[in-house]
Amino acid sequence: MTRPEIGVYLPQMGFTYEQVLHRTQRCELLGIDSIWLYDHLYAPGMPDYPSMEAWTLATALLSRTESIRVGHMVLCNQFRHPAVLAKMATTLDQISAGRLALGIGSGSIEDEHSRIGLPWGTFAERSERLGETLQILYQAFADEVIDFAGKHFTVRDMPIKPPAVQQPRPPIVVGGVGEKYTLPLVARYADVWNVPTYALGELEQKISVLQSICDEVGRDPSTIVMSIEAVMALAADDASLPTVRQLAEKRFGVPAFGLREGGLIGTPPAIVDRLHQLQELGFGQIVLFTHDRGSDETLDLLAAEVIAKL
Image (cartoon, rainbow, N blue to C red):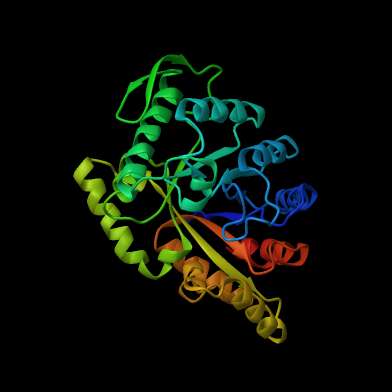
């Protein structure tokens, strides 16, 4: 069985550019497959905390690396017109020689919308807009032109050239587990489905629902890469495990992070066992928060004692 892609999630809150670049280049050197940023206008709940803009940062990181994939977990569909986003994505895929992962979601923080006067709307409305964006992106990547008339967006004969390097498109990652709105979009449009941390206790149920929706729309569920996002508290040995666990609980102890449900607290053998379990459930991509926000020591240990054992 092919090992799953292992990514590291580096939400950029509080980091300088040099700190994010160092972690990204370290991941590349160690053979970690991908790094992921968040897309918020400020650190959620902490508007006075420094936080760099997501797309600009991804562009900088891809220009300073050679092999690692960079994506967002996930872009807020509300922030960028889909035709502009399509142009941005094809351009960045060209710049990076095909290393962009295009994660996108319907938006999650109402406050940052109200601060800059962007419409928020209901979850149904945001999901409708996301659905139209996904149709526009598909058209842009396939045809190199957009001609689309929807409820929320109208684009007339808009060329998207040069095309993306990756074919048929940069992988489109859709995150979320909502059964009424999100999973139908996953079934129709996603190349990768990402399960967020808050849903780690419902994995088998959500997989089953997605498979049922795929059957309804005529999509082979095996054509969707299943991805999971989880906090990993990796300790070098049993003696250091209590300190590692304590830091993880301090930073990621609220229920939304699914620290307990993820099951990724322990020494390397325990982490390898849990990753194998996730692999057997069908997950082909695993994106990890690390308990210490990507220290050299943890990244080295992840590469040498976990990824190498998968």
